[in-house]
View (cartoon, rainbow, N blue to C red):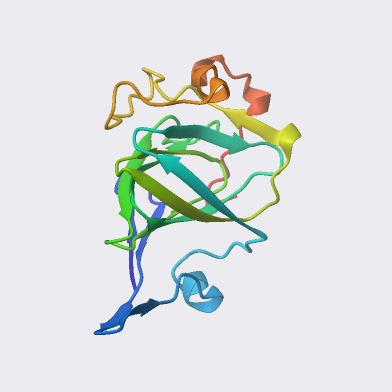
Length: 189
């Protein structure tokens, strides 16, 4: 498997699993704890989720606090534009984002660490998105940032996404009280 750190957010990891193909189809490991730990992903996952969406649906930008979640995201069918945003207060990369296209064809995964907001926009007619979470979903911990926050400046592949009412009414990052944002912990801490 090939592992790449996002250029501007090195904690965000892109994984290209080894794929074994022949005339019958293909096989790949979507997760193997030891191999992922050796690649820098040492969180324990406790919950798997499956999301189905149609073209131009945008989900996000979501996070939890407390009960922060790291996520390992992959597409089972279709194609998405996937985004991670560093929202850890006092982080040197606070407010910066990175993206990757995930699809059933490229079979890439993205690891979004705890302390980052996550979202995606569907590029194909439909998309099935699977993701592992490092903590359980906790409705009282749910938070979000407006997808079109101009200070973050995400270059989404659509200007008129299909949004939930909740996703369309989240605040800007600068409007979120600091006690509702995760804390940056440097490697020296």
